[in-house]
Length: 116
Image (cartoon, rainbow, N blue to C red):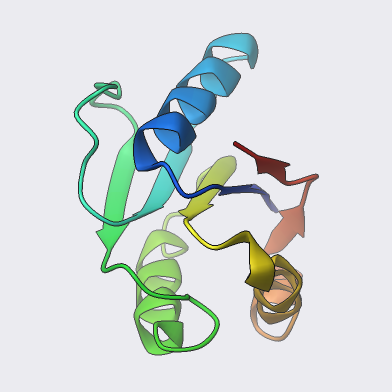
């Protein structure tokens, strides 16, 4: 099972800094990131971390298909940790619901989310 942490906040740079800090505090393990929007250029993630960027837009509404395709590709070789970074915190419950539906319910374990 892949542990999933949702990170939400309007500022993309703050989200990426928060993820980087969380990675430093955690034991080394295979990690993937799904980041909404353009790179903030404040953090350079290690090349061993698989980084996928999705276009801005809610992953449970307008970007649902994009999120499904991205997740399906990542989960072909499932990482131990996955961080999903989104700009709009108002839909976190819907995103969590999406991630707990089949087939993801058997592949992912959601952790506490954090807001930046």
